[in-house]
Length: 305
Image 1: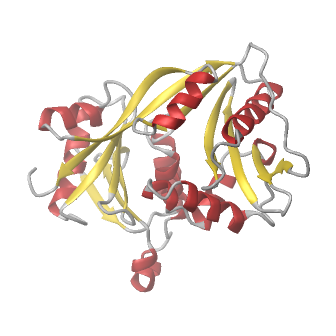
Image 2: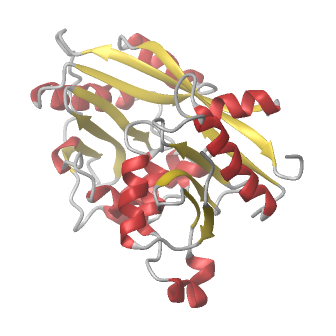
């Protein structure tokens, strides 16, 4: 089976958003790609005047009956743009579907090249990347730790405050911390308030699992945002303000979040960390995390399909 049509656009109708979110559920699309789907303009007329404000480019491949079987989501804010591809694993030859979507992108490239994520092992995207010899641009290490052991707690410094995030008061403060803490990771540092608010719509969002640490002067020094789906928790975003190194805040925040996840019934916790982040890897190994798998980002030259 091959696509009957592949539509490329800057907008997504509500029905297409639902279809794409369902197709990309689990690990096939990152939360950032799903946030682009949530925030996409819903009417083509909106993009006539707001084209520059549309952060995503969407490619949707359907069969002759209108069924969605493959798609691409491209974050055009990044340089180079970051693309993610997803295919219905129930169709014959999902790699062929991903290849056709990629080739459609290459026919109308948003830039000379893109980087594309392969989430997991033996995926359609990964097989396509390896067949074409795309070089590896980046890797994320996926680590895991059981939560059946006693979690060591660090004392919050006197006069400091550890509390839950409030969407009404803390959005700008947290986004500023996120930009500073991840200045060397543009895809994370580029988060906007719309990216943040897109997460509020997810079933897993829980304000109690979004911890902020303020010093005596009321300055945000760190944050640990956890995520939980079923019995599996995640160190979703752990950020420590530059200049706060050496105070043990990373361990303090990590363990506080792990305790919150355990209280909510999680039996294990996972996290994603850049393979080049030696300090973070050392911290997590010290806290009992072990490597589970890796996500790989490939550099794909659109001019050489």
